Image (cartoon, rainbow, N blue to C red; front, side):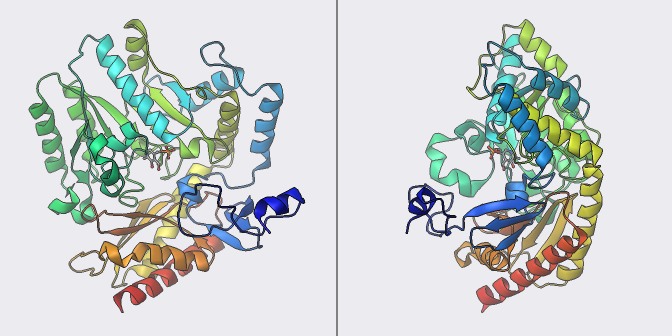
Length: 460
Ligand code: PLP
């Protein structure tokens, strides 16, 4: 019996797919999710999964929060949609005021959209509009970094330095420039486009700006701590203050992509807070609404906003931007983060998870590095920890780790290509901040077991 026959008869789905959904993964049958609470998801067959990645590092306040559903319902009962060119709304104005005190942006002004890629596209257009307003139309060059991810829409993908995702679409890409990733573990490896020394990283950005020519560079875009592409990689400590100073000196806007690192994920409200740096433009998404609503934010500093406003305005917009329901949800997520001290919880539980993983994996012959901040934690898996040689992509090592973990009821996030654009395997962990200590222990145990088995199988 098909899933639609069953639902027509009011039955619970059996876990069989209809074949009518173009799924995110092809060629593998997916279980049907039916319920979620805290850090656990249940499928239609009654299996429980420990959500150690919060989906795609999204779920921060935990699954199944009644107060968020209530906030959503209250707003939806009043009205769900009015067009952003015609109305503003009370939940949106209230949220913008409330979130502004946490954003590492001076005098911030928010432009809410439907996700991270839209936030990045909006940020790029803000940058362009700012320079046009200042009568600097030749500032068209945008510099990003290798080993980064900024989204899958074509502009955001072009900005991304994530080669496996770029490759099929390369004929449509090429507008933006890339400098080295700040990736200490692979510092000096040309194939990884990685440096680990602040002076070298700063000098490289300086020379990219000089090569582009006086008054040509519009913005530098980077993740404060690299998430999906490299697996929770922090730059060396002096990096962000020095990079911000270079940008300021050359009239280049600093765009911080905090889609993954924002809203407490790294144990501070925002990733840049670890270094006390302020951005001119910032993007956020995932944790902003914690998985309860598709929401992203493009944030302009007061200066950027005022300049654009005075200089002729902002030609942009999406049908579903400025959602009042999204704002109501995000307002409640923010209230929960504040009142339950969940940003501090992310810091302390992240430290605990790092220690558990290091105890379990530090001597493992196939674990190159365990790293991260707060509840954004990465494990780089290698064929040889002395030389840092990765497993060949054809071995599909990381898929093997993930499927073994899934069989054991543990959900993970992953990346590939970090070592040289093709090879390289990373596991990314990002459980909800309400994860319990017993669950942290279980994550470390089950991940250790999955890595043991997968590396043994692949090496055999
Ligand atoms: N920027 C960063 C740093 C991300 O991690 C992601 C998604 O993983 C994006 C942008 C794109 O966000 P979305 O998938 O919501 O479009």
